[in-house]
Image (cartoon, rainbow, N blue to C red; front, side, top):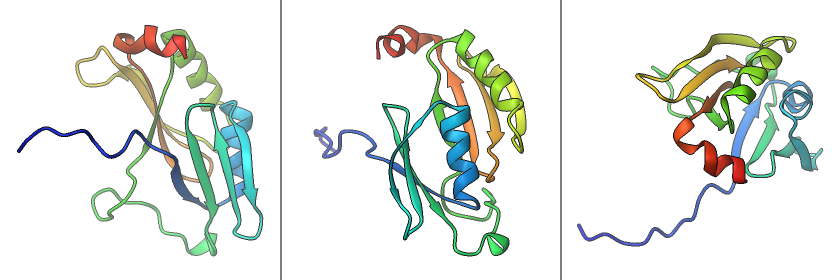
Length: 145
């Protein structure tokens, strides 16, 4: 198969269905420092961004009936992995996120495989699985952003 130029140039946005739009939006904005860049109250949805990525948060219609994601049984998003620019920010973010109300820490900062990437995983208050990762091989490039 001949090599070709991809038709795409990256991710435009990621859409997540959430149990509680308000608490998940607060987590992204108040805990992670993101901003709301748009809303659709009739949908209901909020669009949040860290200046590089956009995530659309949609409120599920019946939160009490929403099924938890099971990576062994469901097709869909396993987790959302967000990059952190340096080790110090990763450690500070872990402390902040771990102390945020209703966050479940799956594991604290540790090597991803044999490294050198370091990551941690949490469930945010609405149950979305998030990974935060620092890769020293990409530190210089990410600090320039």
